[in-house]
Image 1 (cartoon, rainbow, N blue to C red):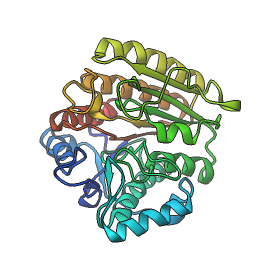
Image 2 (spheres, rainbow, N blue to C red):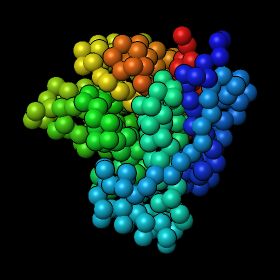
Image 3 (tube, rainbow, N blue to C red):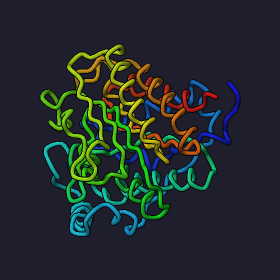
Image 4 (cartoon, rainbow, N blue to C red):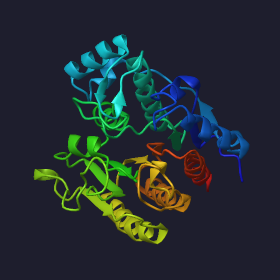
Length: 317
């Protein structure tokens, strides 16, 4: 494989790895370790530019989140106890750690917009359940939503595509931009009748002037690679029509068979298919700009397989 350091960056470091809820929580420290061990052992780490984590200033986070919510996260972070919901406990310095996830994603956006790289991957990111005023589902701050606002407000990007293949519907992103026709969303996920957060029906296509700019594809339990291929062909055709100027992919590994929290049965071929398709769209319409965030995944082997497949496919010519 040709060395593509000039094209692909992967953002790593212990400051990023600190985003977890302890060894007894599904979103534990093992996730980053599983990826890094496979990433290094496979030789992929030698084929990309490796960038460090960065911490976002509060002003950037305010582009998406409400001030009252930010103040609450900071206050609870100082206390280091309690929980935002049944799935999302508070830990000491949570504000700083979550701000680092956000800052790293923003830096990746900046690097792509400045043409330092064409493609980028941030493994511990894609916290798609947090709303503008609430934490939820393991997600304290919504780095994807903030990245979209950065692209719109700082860079003047008109058509941002957010694509999500995590088993869980990306509700925090969808509802934040439900009325925004400039945010294109394609989300393939397990049917909300069977899985948190219970949203993402096919009828949810955007509202008011944004109707038709969102595509939700709920999948039945035990859906496999053939089912994903059919759903992806719909999503890809939709995205080609929309001609996005920048693409963000949330590529959760919890859609792979064997995840303890979900019921889908994809393999890492789903991730390869999605990245390959988005790479072509980005090359045609977005100057190659494709940002991938890791998202969920609670089986260490699946995380290693899916995310290494992502990096390998980003490196393809």
